[in-house]
Image (cartoon, rainbow, N blue to C red):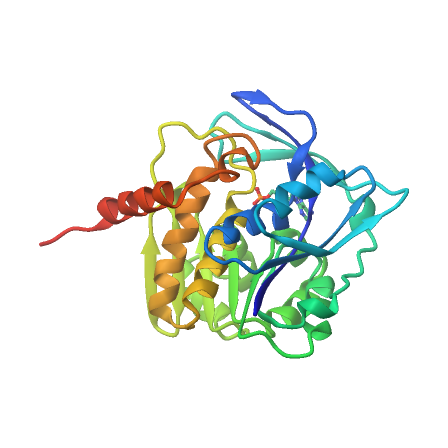
Length: 304
Ligand code: AMP
């Protein structure tokens, strides 16, 4: 039984107040896959790269036990490239370059060996492509988590609404929740979005943590206050990967396990931002993750 992650596998060039990188390996599926691999051993990726993406680059995933049979390599084409520059507060960024390249006409291929999928993470891509993946799986996975962004709300709202109907968990940030629902209050926004199809909603609030909604229940987790945030790129994808990886590990879908899953996702994201790109989430130990989880518990537990 496996966990499939679909999303961009890319080259990124990042600039923050602390420095800048040349092209480094990034992409939503890369971050999510690496994060998930700390909790679940059978992670598989569906994506596309060009022939500029070397075997050495693919090894970053394979070294974490991630199956890349579903990662198409298009000869004579270039990989998706994204470049961004963060402002001094690190909360906002400008996208400098988006070169879709191979992503422009991405047609996801699901290898036969992926048909045992129990957990599916739909990384941020066109809602059409996300939907295609669900339809190409012979059996509906036990849990489908979908990430998306305001861009698709602007240009493909109908497709987005149709895809949202097919998933169990939607992860978006606070501004996107407001845009999708037309409500300013996040409580009202959540109530509305939960009528659109997903049974669970996660609203990410960056350095302010995340909220989990299900029926009339709400759970809030903080983000770990870090002395130094080096590069927030991929934090959301790392969160989502950690979340679904943990859910796959425990195997039972309910609100209580999801509460733990968003803590584990937040813990992985807190590592991610400590260094450029994927660097910090390449070589974590179980002991480091455990220690960080304890910090979360300490941060938010109290008795009266
Ligand atoms: P995040 O910081 O969570 O927004 O994720 C950043 C990652 O998303 C980077 O590694 C980019 O390669 C990737 N990315 C940026 N824009 C897009 C896009 N339009 N479609 C797919 N992936 C993207």
